Length: 289
Image (cartoon, rainbow, N blue to C red; front, side, top):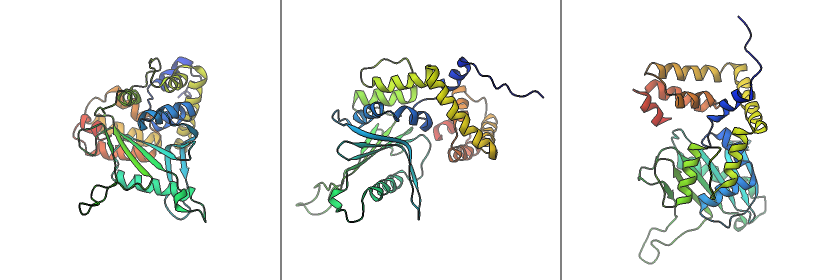
């Protein structure tokens, strides 16, 4: 049997990367590591054109030496010192609110130094983006508000502890045109899209999908991750398991097959195997991805 070809043309590479969109944490991480692109994202989702960022990290890990570490898809710091964490959760999460709670606590612990007063803690906002409306209210966005329960003198009074949560989903529209446009673009991620709302984000998508340098960067990252996975025989094996289970249900649409083959997170692939094994149809699997 001959060896697999090692020479790949630019068009072949571009075809591989073309299937990525901004719901992929791998692709989103490269696009939003750019300060200007991340600033556009935060300004639109926070509905605050005055937000200015001074630092951004993607796939950023806050390590806990005695407990559970966390990894943020995007963690940004404003010039005010306030923090914004962005999570892209395109698969079912069993405890999203508790996940958000723990992520916020990890930010606090990593920032508050010994001897520092609590009033010096910055505000922390988590922007949690999901594929489906897991809250179930038929809305595109939900924002948590802390209020007092009690007698008529205090009931309804706000309690601001500096923690803020917004839950967006890609199923329903919000009441804001720019937010709707951005959320739609996360799924579409057309490199030739034209917009005045987030031109830098589109520019970054175009760079990684169309420009040779960007395409090479993405292919190198994907290949490195796959090589690491292949060393243990895990990623490719799990991808094959998902595909075989789905093929038993019928013809797998190209968009689903491409999305599965792009995935490099073993925990996500494990969830998809369980979903595929219990699904009665490909449509059911896609809804639960």
